[in-house]
Image (tube, rainbow, N blue to C red; front, side, top):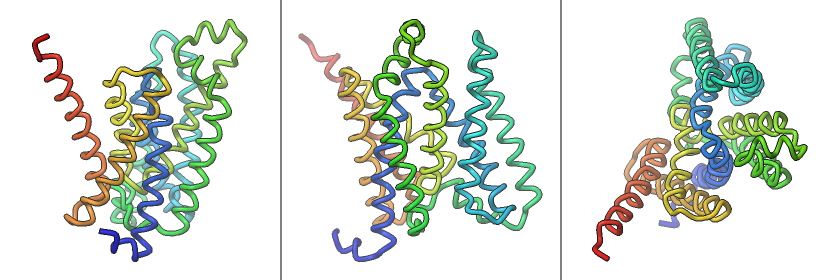
Length: 271
């Protein structure tokens, strides 16, 4: 099996996969616990418009997606503060706006509609050095920020009102979390695609939550499940000639189903 690593594109694929395997559940755990799981889908739809805009302007599409998602993140947080009793409206508004803008831009640049499929469904086996550099920089920024703000993020995630009373800048921390989510999606779209990015952020976390451990143990297990999904999914995709992005996410789903099945058997066992 190790002979596949003689190819540069395979090494790039695994290095990029390992990075997103760490950052996706790292951010995903916070957004799941804050009940903002759908924010990944909203920003993914915005990223499609960003990629299309990047292609139209002749810049690296991931940069276009990142810029537009960071702007969308600011809008989401603003709308969440405006509609505090209906915070989910912010996600719905941004999702629909992003998708409508993407459709408009795609209709303008019909010549690159074929290229857009690379970002829709991912193309990890075509990751080049530029992609790997961008993913690596974003990964470092995300991990460093979470480590630096780990106490504030933890406090805001579980006790937002208490954190506000304790002097924690809740609005700023929430905004940073949304911007980190945007960076995570930007790093991931080349790997699993826009349509599946949020799945890799949520499913390993959902699997880890079933183990019913403490916060930090849940985070560790979520990262382990994510890395296992990336490595296992990539190996299967390479040897079975399958779509890497879909295979990685499906592998993650299988692990969740396995954990649920094992728990059902344990709960059904007579005491």
